[in-house]
Amino acid sequence: MTRTDPDGTRNGHRPEHPERRPGVADLRRVGVHPDFWYPVALSRSVRGERVIATAFAGERIALYRGRSGAVHALEDRCAHRQVPLSMGVVEGETLRCCYHAWAYRGDGRISQIPYLSKGDTRPPRGVRGYPVREAYGMVFVFPGDPEKAAATALPDLPAFGSPHYRTMTFSRTVHCHYSFMHENLLDMNHQFLHRGVVGRLHPELLGYRTGPQSVEARYLFTHTGGKRNRGAGLLAAEGLTGRDSADVMTIRTEYPYQTLDLVPEQAERPAFRLWAVYVPKDAEQLTCHAYGLLMIEKPRFAGALHLAWPLIRRFTERVFAEDRMAVEAEQRAWDEQGEDRNHEVFPLILDVREVLRGNGVPIRPRAAACGPYPGADGACAPDHASADAVAPAGPEASTEPPDA
Picture 1: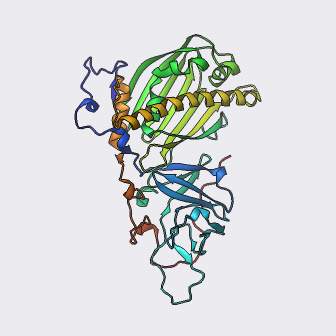
Picture 2: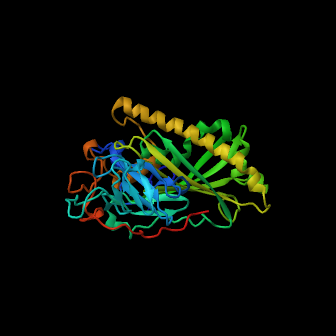
Picture 3: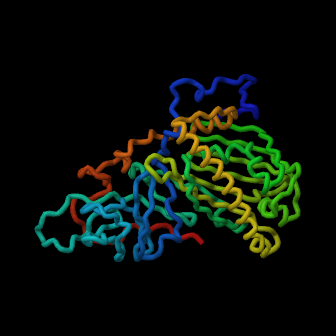
């Protein structure tokens, strides 16, 4: 990784950043790369033998939990009349279309067409099935090349489930391109936006480093005055442990995820750790769904965190609401102007834009947005996810046990 001074210089010289050169693609027209695991629902929302509708970058997905407890993800259309399978009925490990009762296995293959006799002509393929994994209380799908799914790791979150931490889960839709969210979290110079809840905070950039897939920044936070929300102090462990110190915050974009650790001075471990990802919903990727896991250190006094939980939740929700207001305003400006007219001066943000641009993919025209692996019938079902013949129903591979 390249180490960079806080002012953005390397060895005392500030190089011309690639983004400032002509011909560089507008980041807001760059899509997320599909060859990663992305959450598309909370596990608790996919109840037993029920089906729900979700989406990834314009690809409509039907999620259902079979009788075994395993979750399956299918392209949300029946191969027969294109009626959404999310309107269907779960029977054991199969999903039956609500219209003509065509039944599908968890891999997208057709298991039954009830009104056809033996020997009648049958369709050669079903619909696309997505690799699925459950972890951290969420349902992840792999929307890219399924051949890469097994070799691609889920995010590693050692604090989740640790006896030292309790986790708060967030799931919110934000009407903006996902890149605005990465910039918002990484650029802590926007604390003026939160002055009503955190008072006057002074973030000092201690340094940062960049690489082909990551940008990591370290800030020193000091409170310089003003009224501070009670929940803010509790989240930083000041109200739980009596600590009142400067905090070191480390924020990292490790494509396509983000993490944030806050470590109070002389603390043994972070007071809290945040993991977040922003999953595009529509084909143009101008709306995303933010999933977050906030892992908060448990205090020595049993029950203290339980009492503080509502205050911490209200504080975090208010901060998120203010951030959402800002990034959605940025998106509206882009919509009105038809291009990115930002005049970014912070080298750290210029670098994260380069990471997002370099690891992303061009946003496909809407007509091609149903996936990079079209099926033989010209629809969204890929050859590799749909069987050549009608297959008997049967249990699919089991998923990880649900998280507490």
